[in-house]
Image (cartoon, rainbow, N blue to C red; front, side, top):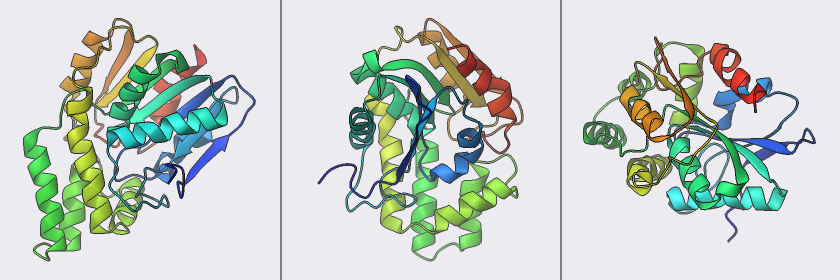
Length: 258
């Protein structure tokens, strides 16, 4: 079966040589990134998709990092894309790093948000897997379950973005939730040893209050990369895109210089 079968993706063709590829985090579908999609500069194409098993992308098996990278590779090949800007958030950072390692000739820039090149901390792993099991076993309420995950992702757990995210989260079945959780927990071990020193034109953005990946993760990654721009944002958590200021202040200026 093709990795693109039942995959929910969209390609905005602005007749450009360069294409921005948005690679979402787990627990998110691409509607969460609407500010980015709506703000893409007209001089670029835009490709976005839902991870297999999430959003409206159907999946009948567990997907890991290799499978997700294959999705990106297949989309790039089928659409005939030559110069791509990889835009990864959370788990999407691991996918972007792995894809670039396999196909560096296709990548002209990278935007890495709220991610890491090292494995997720074991305490977070235990907390998230534990809360999922407790919820589906009926040991904690839906309210408590969603609050646990909101608190690890959002600065303002009562924001419209947080509510939108929660509605998406509770629409998932346990198998999809566990599969993508396991994928992101194991992804760090698959990119930890990658040589990123040769990367060029890299923008790294991280929330100072991120509980999933500490900002030190991005600081260490920025040291490994010879030329990159790093922004640690005060008052921001893992879900950076609670408003469109980050796009206007950091992302678009970076893209405009490419």
